[in-house]
Image (cartoon, rainbow, N blue to C red; front, side, top):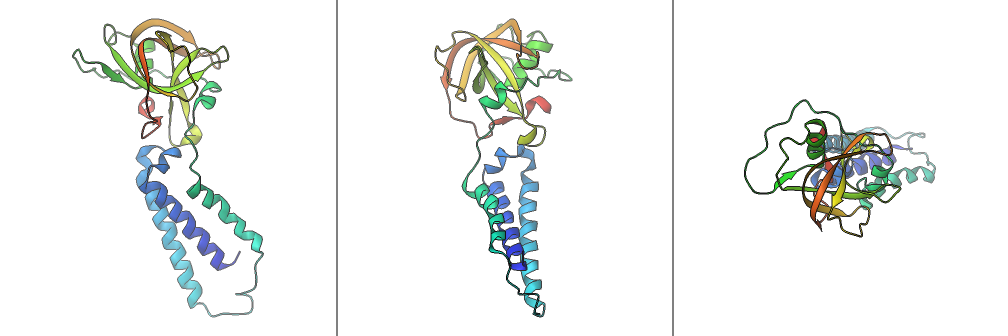
Length: 236
């Protein structure tokens, strides 16, 4: 590929990273804390493209410099354009149903706010406290937890959030089994805000036999997909 094509690809890739970093598109690929690196990488690629073009204009022409390159090489721009035009969905129920729960024992449990108001928890926070702290701080508290729905092979519903170590390629689910006043019809990938209470009931993940706690559902209402669909609390 000639210098012009190289410059175009560098610029397109840099522009794609800047577009992703200045919007929320980057959250489909990497965790929220990596935004500055995405923006920096985009700026460096655009600067490299500009430097390459400047160098090419200053280099004396010769017989080999401007020879015609195969046009098929421009097809390399298609993956870059795809990133700009087609935003991939966040990993959802299919990945969760085929991957075992990644719940691990945390180093400790921070104190929860007191009061009678419903306590809002992340999926991983509830699951960790329910399994590894026997729900001590959760008993007699009304809880609110948001996640998406997945179903196992027998149709049993789970509330799930996918956690990231670094990027979407290493995303793993943490699951909560639902009991109580569960809606009779649940569609996979539907985001729900569950209001409920702790129950000591537990089960095992059919994929990896990992521990999964139950949540006693009082009400469930559909909610929009959150700003950041991934949950980083389980590995912080």
